Image 1 (tube, helix red, strand yellow):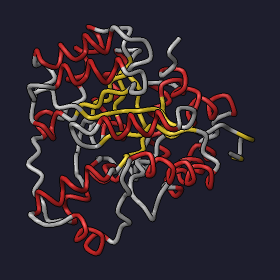
Image 2 (cartoon, rainbow, N blue to C red):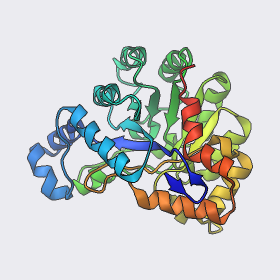
Image 3 (cartoon, one colour):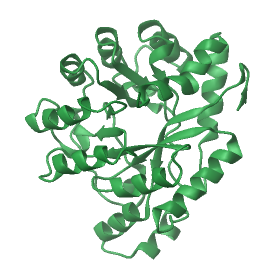
Length: 305
């Protein structure tokens, strides 16, 4: 993709794969049908099978000149959808999947997913599923992750809001007691060869996320979303200030560009990319740093070698 730093192979570290299975689950929770959701949301409902949705994402990435994207299965138990997408287009996608460690079949499901070779990111949402990262069931999953090259652990911290649930009038009984990035510290220290990713700069817990990054060289920040959490920061903070501080503490080798793209017809969220390009240009990063942030860092931590 052509950028102010020249032609860069951009890889998006944060794209939600909103599958047919996801919307079927949401429809069931509403007590209605899958077909009712499209007029309510104003979104295009995803096709089945998932390979067809993957094809739409390939076309979308091609349209914007994006080389690769990490696809996230956004509900527990939907790893099969992303696995199918990556199998169909292994040179365009990396596969992440959400797991709830508190569910009985979580550990064997993780073992099976990782063994399949197409899923590399284990996504933990402790506030969503209301558990502590200190729980022994989390450790069991990380033992599996730590034994496989090219596997990372994505831990959502800070503010968590699921827009599609809000649009559908569904409750989101999350518990922010479990949202603190400091809880990642003991895991990163225990598994020094396992890479951890905290998305959205910590989503309102920026200071805590920076502390963990400072103490643990295997902790990364992803830059995705509008980063609206900045409204909570006092004194006032803008995106340029966020990037300056993140670069100061974590360095350009531990920032992963992402958009938080998810649904069609919006598709790939180019406005997020444009804003981050403009901001990083304003603060004067060089071509080496830009290449790292916009693609090379993600490729490096997901390398199987």
